[in-house]
Image (cartoon, rainbow, N blue to C red; front, side, top):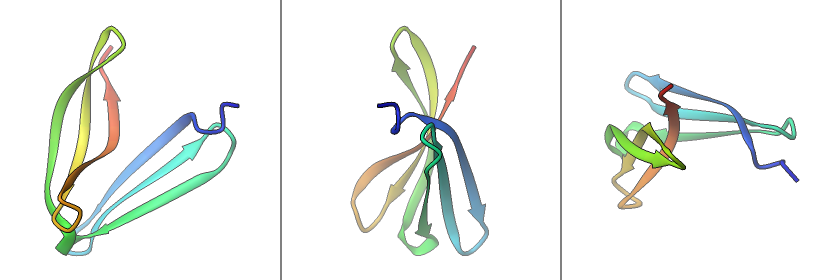
Length: 77
């Protein structure tokens, strides 16, 4: 239990190559996802709700998958 709780996320934009997100979980496990630049349609900063708070959400829209991928949540205190 608690293995899927994200402790840290990093978002890296690698110029003409693409974007990478790396997640570190409470269990100690790490997972990295890379999206090549030719698959990235857009990167957006959006607002959403998390419980009773408004949060900023960094998202990547992929051309090939034709859907929104939430990569990073930045909380506002």
